[in-house]
Length: 108
Image (tube, rainbow, N blue to C red; front, top):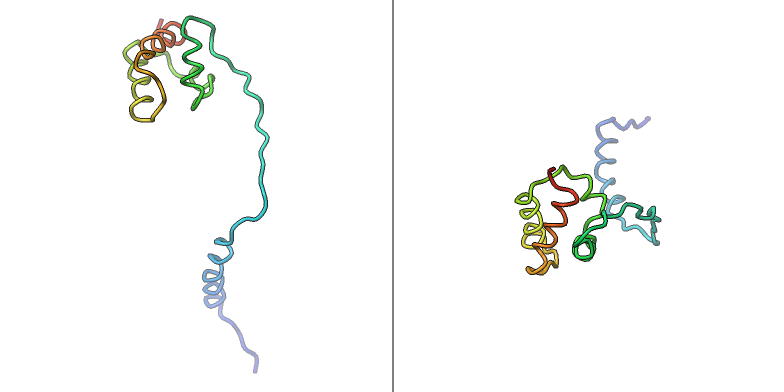
């Protein structure tokens, strides 16, 4: 007598065994070489603060590719980064950072 496994039973077996393989942790080390950062903030008054406080989380390219914002909009972004996202921006530096962003990347 020949035993035949139904396709349903075969699929059920695969479904039950698949999570076991997926849950197996990876061994070894994986390393990735990222390309060097080539974009830079435009020079200007306050660029040092922007580099110190913004490059922790963002590339300069991230800032330069944003749509041009008004002073009020840039202030909202900077305050959000500080209060919501936890950026280590000192309150005394917010005006200088906003002024730089408006001058270099704001609405003309």
